[in-house]
Length: 133
Image (tube, rainbow, N blue to C red; front, top):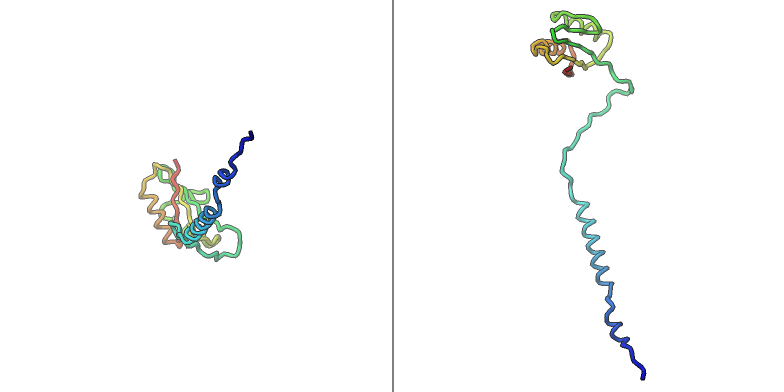
């Protein structure tokens, strides 16, 4: 006697993959479309236009103030009442609109503020303060 195998049961056990692939492709299209309309949160940056055609950076005026309140410009000591005149002399030779004041951390704030005010009066628009420890 021969044994007979059930081949019809094996045919019914196969899964048809076509409907599942259709659903996967529809979900893929849905996610692609929805992510293209999502706006990311963040800051909008307005970058300034490049007004200078040259690639050379402009010189910045450097002013140093030590812990005793001594003001140094271009390697020489300057009196606090003569800062405007010295800045105007520097601007005549080197046109710039930036200045960097490097102050020691123990310098009196009044001296730094006075130098900042005099730099503004002399015609420098952008003044930055650096603290030296």
